[in-house]
Image (cartoon, rainbow, N blue to C red):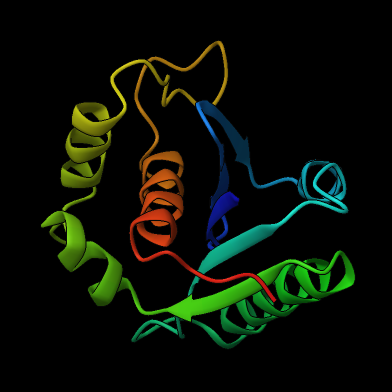
Length: 148
């Protein structure tokens, strides 16, 4: 079984756990499609963060965020990837992660010390979006999300 975690935010990310292999994909529509298409015909399940608009978020950014969220669902459906919508509080509780983004990075580094959380080769700071996507993929694995 392949486990996917997706943080759907503007600087969101996707993580794929396939046995011992871990792939991290920063949000870029073509890369998401390429990664998910590469799983075609294989049993894959996804933990998709179920988020909603933030207080004081503008109308345009809320609309764009909702569009991205729907687009991700459409891509998963198109390639036959089962997914569950999971609220942030639920998956974060599994790992004792707080609202502080650095806690996601710390937990992720403890669980996956060999995985780089740098968004690009030029980055010097670990990316909380990559960390959270990987933790959601691990959440799907721990909760044994089902295929189909």
